Length: 179
Image 1: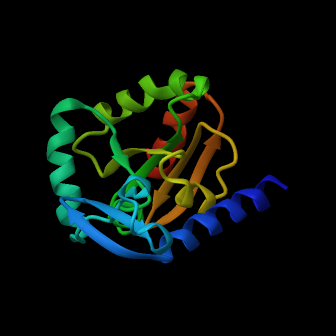
Image 2: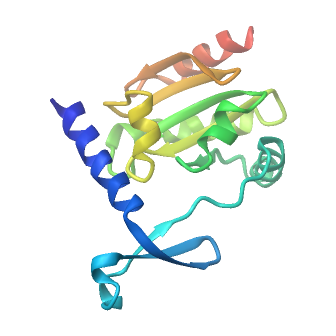
């Protein structure tokens, strides 16, 4: 039942996005005014527009350089999921999480450690906030968080749902890496 409600809400959201007629771009943010509310600027809503498309390798190199020094996982979204995960030539571990989720907070240090530990290897460690990127979470049927999916050649090959110990998550990643 929850899936049908979620699907219905997402359908309404995307339908409302398609009905917008006026768009004004300022940097990467677009203000969209609905046709019914054109005369009232107070009711205009702001939505993120997909940034200019860059090749997956270009985006990956830019983010890798920035992330390597900090040992932080890469924050991804619906907008760049395809480029960063599905088109990546690396193995990608994606942590599906939300800021309000206690178990997500419990495994967050592991994810950060993996980002440092696997830096420079054929691995990308990423986090996707399910509240900000519901389409990707729905596509992969993420109904409970934290959820870990490991992608290889653009396909999910392993995963786990729940706050597993660090060794379990690391073992799954190492198995995919062939260690």
